Length: 430
Image 1 (cartoon, helix red, strand yellow):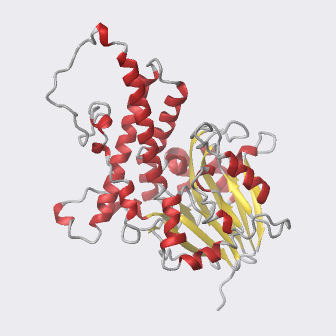
Image 2 (cartoon, helix red, strand yellow; image 1 turned 120 degrees about the horizontal axis):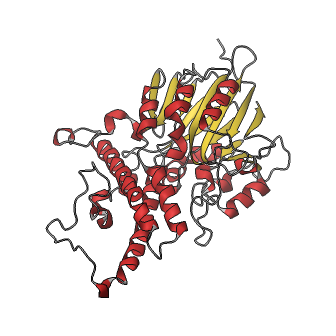
């Protein structure tokens, strides 16, 4: 018996500010549509055309999916991708009764524990150690947040520096409530890595879902090095044991040293300079934490007949490079990706989440004039919250946005205005 195939896909892109929230609706000739929610989070509300709250987004999703979600995908743990799954907005999503929840392999509950001596011989011991490192990096982000009030009051520490520290710190904390909500949601959970079979043939008839990332440690041992410097290895964090109560893994740097009650007059000029230096070092650290978590992101390719939809979450170059260069079938993957019809722009348009030569340069539909053949790109972002133009790291990257506008049909959440509504619908005939 031939499986039914969708006749079109409707894509709803919600303006949640700095975050991601996209609903895919696969429509069939007969029977109900099948729906997939890809991420549901935000850390900074949109400047204009924004919904009043994530509750409003959740209710709108409920209406547009007909009261039923089939699959929920949380590409990775960053707050701007999963924060909405916590609290009342998360309860609305859970009430839509998703059948399957898909997350990266790093989120599997059985792995998120410290490796013990008895587990050292297990083939999964390396994965356990890696996820334990991720937990320690989350604790480091919490420490950074704890120090911001003091740094903000320090002469010489600029508001832009403390704002970026706060933004990245809030993004990289563990988001425990949202994580627990995802674990409790759905009838089945899939923790995916490159090449995983998600078993969605019955849930999404006629839709292939291929996992292109992240790789496991066995597939790409290099990713372990990204998190090798855990919280105890950063001296300026180890020196602030009391910054976050309840973090026993962080120790005094010099536990036997005497503590001075007052700074000598002749040394007071040095204190703000040291504080400024610490703030700059913390910002460098929290950027590292951000990159590590981004590279645990799912990269998913939806295939309906000859139509390809590519959703890479926040995957950065290190994640992409396995699928596009080092995997045994990388040449085949690159050939197929060249025909991508819809591309969700990675990491809100950052400088290294859309590899210029490995990925963007291979999109055959980029630059096509015919709207029926032209590449469609989806960009969910808010400018001014991440990176800086002076360093060439602003998000979204100006040069990338110019290229997207010139060579694709760009749907940019920043173009949403109150008068035109806070979401956009893209219809792709199949």
